[in-house]
Length: 238
Image 1 (tube, helix red, strand yellow):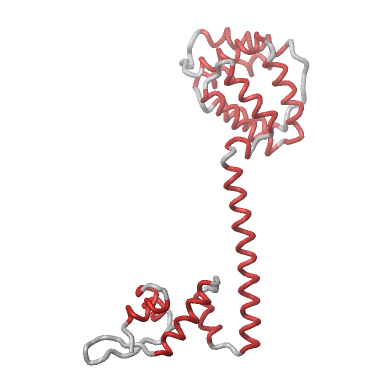
Image 2 (spheres, rainbow, N blue to C red; image 1 turned 90 degrees about the vertical axis):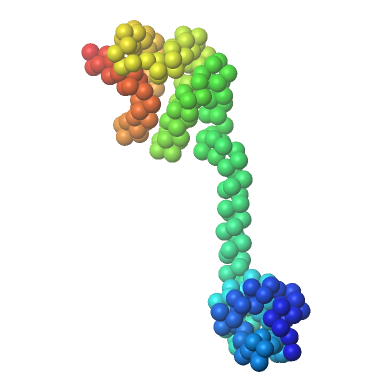
């Protein structure tokens, strides 16, 4: 007769596992002897081996009792169902693993390589990381909500980045993020931006809902930018 510790050691499980199997009703729990110990016989060893084998194979504990009591044909059918369930779980875990691996690529999970290149070029000529993040988020919205507009926007942005006047304006906008909303420099910046825009060929805009979200994403970062947008909107209405 074996104590619970010897039983667990024989089968290669922990005492805690044996007690858990008792609680789940998988393994019969013997009465205590006169010394207050529970003593296990050979049948307990066999039963525990069967439980451990099924558990190690991935059978959920909720189904082990069913399999232990099943007839051969029922057992085979149940094992097939468990195998199919495990296959589904493996596929799902594989999908999640791939998603996690893609997350390591950072922005590349959400944006095409052309847009990543634009963001990297902005960093290269001195744009702050917070400005890059704001533009990145606008690109994420554009890619998700108006993917048909992305190629034209990429071409327009690449052309703009090649223009020294645009780069100077962009860096000034980056600096203006910290200005007050009534900063006297804002009207001049708005006029310079409007003049530069007027020299560019028109390109198709995404739907008004998408454009509004992109504008809101940008102007939420700074009261000065909100004022700048108001000045630019007023100029467009004139």
